[in-house]
Length: 407
Image (cartoon, rainbow, N blue to C red; front, side):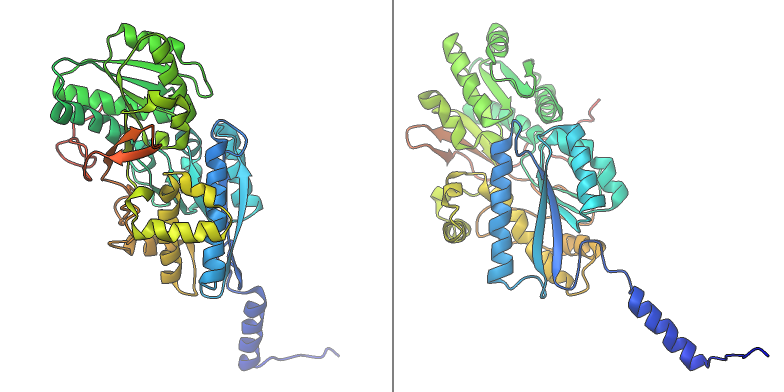
């Protein structure tokens, strides 16, 4: 005779709750009761390795600040895993897949490089993983908008336009010819596009010379731009290569006024010695020489962490500002942290105060975190960069109806 076992409705309900309790309502990827796992891909051994080391050091100082000084994020400590992409787009896809599928990180932070970031744009959208932020110069990082990809840097398209604005409206030379020397990838092509837009607006012609990523000898490019009669030249690329270009220009007797993009606001530009003096650069950041509260805070934190050498890098706020904003957004999410809540929290922050380090703001409809820049001039003797303008926008503003349609 079979024994019939009957379960009451109450018992069945308790059993179901117990089962769900064991299985759990799945926590967000990369989030446990006591940790938040973040990931990043960095060039640790390629052409931009010095930037990769700057980024990783900054993240370590930031994590120390959050974990030790703030006690974590609602009881959770931050943890980080970094994959080396060597600034290579193929290796970037591999690094991205490892971070998302193997390490299972909650979000990606502080990634950079126009070409590497372009390689994983579709992957970011597919995986719905927040990337905050990308320091990449190209407009495609925020146009069209990708909900999960935040941009914070100087746009080389904006800055190339600003160069022509500054020449025409501020410097006002009697005769001039503009040009651009650019790294021949997504990064440099953004500068080329901006120069093209500006020259069409002002009815100017321009010359262009591209170079392959990793090149160190720019003699050919300098010769080409000199032959075209370029008197004012925008440069898009790494600071050491910029210094090499200045030296090549001097060798051949070419003496244009150079405008370096934001990556050249770097001590490595002084490798050119006196040749760097008097040239212009673009920046969206506050300078240490200005003594603003944000820099005082950086001095305290980085000195305490034994990383005071990083304080000599003017680009430091470019990395630090978004980390401060991310800290607030993580705190605003409360204990119930999810990727979607983080995005909503970032989008809700207004008038974020960096202590004078630079402006940054997003909204549900834009991922372009920077709209205002200053033009700096290099003082090679003092090895500093001096503001020549107040904060300004390019005359052709992204998102404006007045912006010419690009072809």
